[in-house]
Length: 356
Image (cartoon, rainbow, N blue to C red; front, side, top):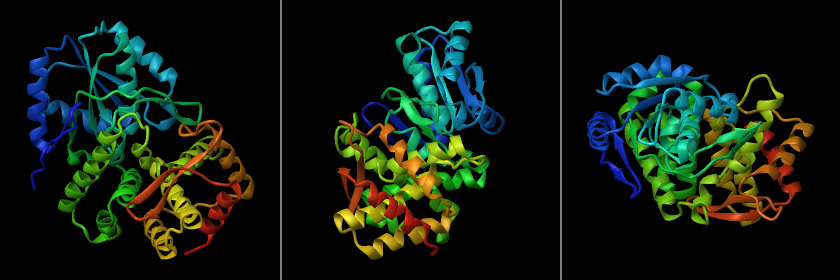
């Protein structure tokens, strides 16, 4: 199936082979002084050569270490310095070829270098395709606190080529599925049902469900680009998910991937939704059962739960010292800016810990 491009107003999202033609046409028209390609050690090995075979322009390749732990201002400093050393000017272009860390950080580096140069995103992970590279959020972590420093700035163009997914480790692919499950829960009962029966889908179906996921996120972001209201629903599962991800990153040897942490956050949020908004209990159970088919159940001690709860105060969505959640009234019917008592968060962890 051939997918239509999505014109967001600020930039266009292209799909598959046809996208490379549009990319080349765009770059010819813009007459950039220099083109830089940013990748990490993983995508440099697996994806950059493939990309360059379809990209008929001369480039300078810049490489950073792979991993969330390198998504820092220190890495940005070295990237700004590298761009400066390579004589990048305001008419230069940065193309980010990689997963969410590369597109988030590359977008931030480009948006702040010489007060902003153009950038293009070529997401190579499922997570980046359906989430990180859409909506203009760029940024880096502050210590273990996720995405505390950043700006909202759109790429000039986005190209989604699902062939890059063949290079992904299984757990990274699974991590991206969490955001797709989320898109169904917050916006489309029909899409949630399709995702629930993922095991019956073929590889050909994958391109279609990625396209649908991108459309869902784009529709939400286009209505609320600066996250004043509706866009907050994209944070479903992320309030506790980010706190869990940050805690594990700094306290355990084996880190949790973003999607793994968000999957836990969605189960916790579903339980809290039942308690606060009378979200149907059978749907809470359905969410838990479905997500635990894909994401392993983690154990958290009472001390760890307490520490995770302490991290909630750093959540970017907080205001006036209050911690706000996105919860569900029904599947496809979210509510945002809901305050939740801490005792309920502990109850939610108890529920999550029960073996299914």
